[in-house]
Image (cartoon, rainbow, N blue to C red; front, top):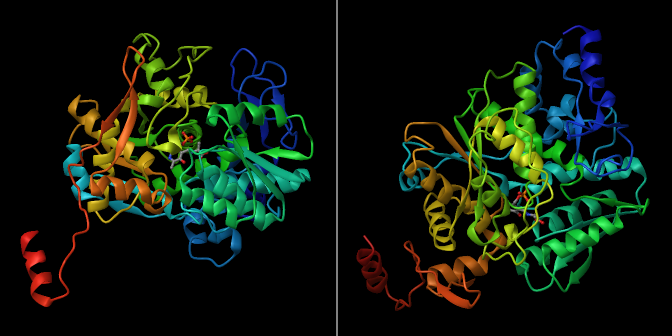
Length: 468
Ligand code: F0G
């Protein structure tokens, strides 16, 4: 590549802008303006990378690939390896824990369970703080440092908090996290304690914490790192690039993700879209989002859309009906009012994917079957395999199609859930349509409880024999 083209590529990100995604507004803001929503109409913001500039760069894919074996700290990050598409100057000091570069596994047992010939699982739980949040946090905390923030804050169901706490510690920034009291897995909470965050346990649910975060948005010394922040999405979109690289740039037919606050699905949609617009791929995968039955505002909205709305250029609905009291044992996605629903819905509609729900029983069994492939994930991640099973049953996905599910968190994020499932003590507080609470017992199809075995060779062999 000529020096001139190389320089052009390196500087593309620096000329990015922030833009309101509401078509009738489309207001533009500078890349270092500290805003989280459009100051003209209140709509969501998105970073616009000048892709035209990058189109003249002939060997982007080779460059990114070559960096994967380099020892430059930026190249060792699976996010900053793709820095031509990130909204930063080339020489910005990055806050990184060498996130990304996560494995893509074949999962034959999960495939069979889900009604597919083959299934691949991209395990984002193999990130430094064991969830996909790290790929976004490296970008958001790098931006916080550039803006001269004193503190970073977020509302969280646990993983965003652990991730932000770690990156803030690396950046020597103060960090405050707002958590719904008593609703966070102890393992996630322990991470945030260790990373030194100020942990504010709020009497309320995640959506209450998120409302408090909006109140903090006008304090200049505080930087908000929830996925409403478009820089988070920029980091997270690189997962699409990395996945395509791992697929040899052959676009999978379907990419399936869990849905909570909807940052992940929004980011993937943006990542694939940028690859298409750069001409690095020639079609988009169908993006499908799976929600837990008791916390599924976007699936409800999607189910109510008319087929004429599900066309490429339909205008997005203005409102979403929140779920007032979201319920699920997959606490990571226990969210009733997702902030990034518009971007996520746009991605699903653009790619002709689906948004569906799965039950607690389906999540629990799918999680255990993923485990049988030797791959441990947290409950929220297992909505994907449960969802794919439903989508194949309804012919939305065909057995021979190529499917990738994104696992978002590691199995050790919620060991209590796993233990209860396998011991047969997992239960769920549900509400009937009349509004009365009832306890539903989860009966695990793949239970595997520890057993008491005598301390002898014979007893151990007998135990093995009995399980053949
Ligand atoms: N899976 C896991 C393990 C999560 O932690 C989350 C979200 C999701 C899926 C949903 O992703 O919000 O981008 O749609 N966790 C957030 C948190 C809300 O605070 O850790 P999303």
